[in-house]
Picture 1: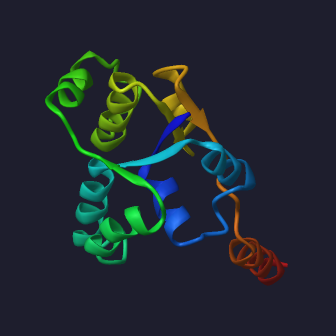
Picture 2: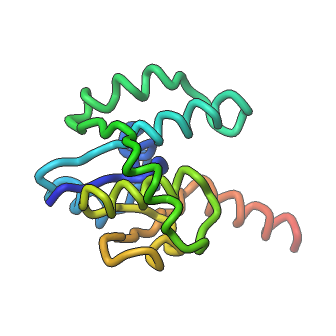
Picture 3: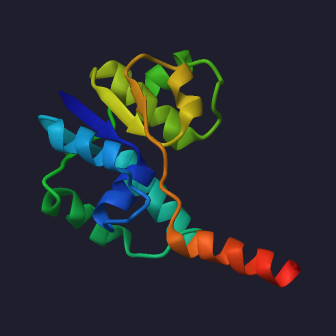
Length: 145
């Protein structure tokens, strides 16, 4: 199976984040090929520039090959397919990733369940809540009492 991973899954995988659940890890390990779109690097670059993400986009580019993944370029056919997609989701990066999965075709792994509406090619996983977040909730609850 060829597997395109969305930007968040890619970031979690590269950072070995505990948010990447076991199911996602198993799906990626079972794939013949794990693919990262150039659109994900574009999204990382923009979010880094506006302060929504930390890191160097060039390091994420290097991480594609270092992780054993393959980069998928953006083609005219990918871009044109976006036009045909219904507006279930307005995020331009996610819409382009869905279009790439449909055009190629390949499975698409994401943590965004809204994207399942686009195609049977979409597989969703759940982000694991980290202990730090759980502890912060407990601390707030303790303080409120």
